[in-house]
Image 1 (spheres, helix red, strand yellow):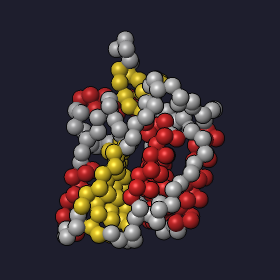
Image 2 (cartoon, one colour; image 1 turned 90 degrees about the vertical axis):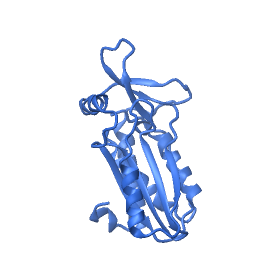
Image 3 (tube, helix red, strand yellow; image 1 turned 135 degrees about the vertical axis):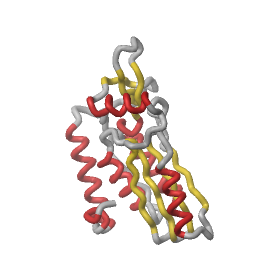
Length: 206
C-alpha cells in the first residue's frame, strides 16, 4: 500500500472509497439487472486482449498479478470481512468477469458471471516466525489465475494471533486496481465486526 493511502485514517479511507464508488457509478449509463443467471458477454478492451494472449501463451504467467498485503494489529471479525467483500463483488461486474474466445472463435470476449464468489482463505500461522509469514505471502502471490474460470480475486488471511493478521488481496491487472484498494478499505472497516452496506449494483466491464 502506498504511503498516501497508508497515512489516511479509517474514516478518511471510507470516505475515499465512497467517493470512488460514486464516481464509478456516475460513469456508467445504468446499473445491471443480474436476475438472469446467464453470463453477459462483451468485447475485450485492447489491454484485456494483451493479457488474454499472454495467458494463452503461458497459463502460469503471474507478471500481471496485482497484490496488496495489509497488516491488522487488532482483533478482526473475519466473517464480517468476508461478507463485506462478497457484497462489493456482487455490486461490481468487473470483479465477476472471466475471459474466453467467442463462440465462432474469431475474437476474444469478456464474460460477466452472475456470481463469482472470491476465494477467501485463512492460514493458521500461530507460532510462525516473521520469515515464515513472508514466505507464505510470496507463495500466495505467485499462484497464477485461470482467466477462463475465475474467480480472478483472492484473499488470504495469515493469522499469527487474534490481534496480528496479514491480509493479502490478490487479483489480475485488468483495470480493477482502484477497486482493489476499495476492497482493502472495505475489509479494514469490518475489523470490529461492522458490515458494509452499499447502494445499487454497478456494471463495469472494462
